[in-house]
Amino acid sequence: TRGTATTVDGVPCIAHTVRMTTAQYYSSQPATLRPAADQMNGKTVVTYYLDKNHLPRKVVELVTWTAAGKRHSYREVSTFTRWGSPVTIALPSGAHIVPF
Image (cartoon, helix red, strand yellow):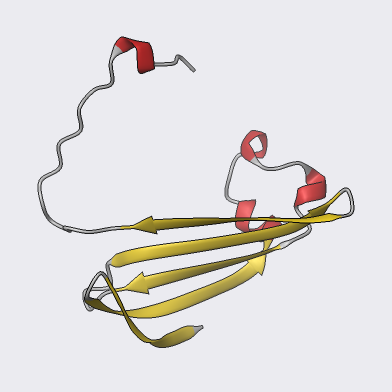
């Protein structure tokens, strides 16, 4: 759904909200990365805050589910700034590298 106009860090945005089941949310991930089957019974709400160029400024995910008779949830917020600016990514030290 399209929400009302808002701002993120002073930038005008429009909020777009997507609602889906937890199973739908995780369906694009490999089975080995999906949660246990008893955690796939919930709901997921993702809100994208897009600027005038349709670039995401913020994404808020709220996932809820019931397992072992208890309700669980987690909320994840990602913010994005300085679109088009150069990016420098430093390599981690050897102590911070884990082989897969």
